[in-house]
Image (tube, rainbow, N blue to C red):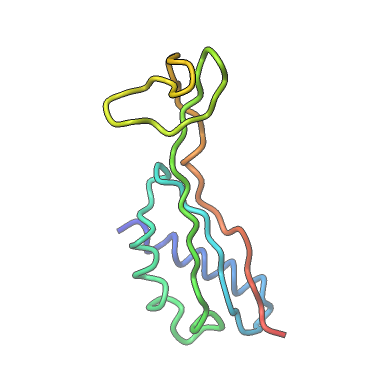
Length: 111
């Protein structure tokens, strides 16, 4: 449910940046651990964009998988199910901020 206001903000950003011109595409980055469900943003987008300059815009979502960082070798890696061990050296992996992203990467505006 909290994806609705987030989607409203995405559209507000696009409208502001487009200066009223038609928005062709919005490129969004969504980390799997950010707290927002990408498919819900996709669901709300056309409804909220209706009757705005974003109405026919394509919403592209780049999903970022979370990564751990090995304490031994510094390798960044995706966690295996039930394991926090580095695939390279077997060291313990610790959480990073990778996978917590939620931002508009770019907006393509019509000429």
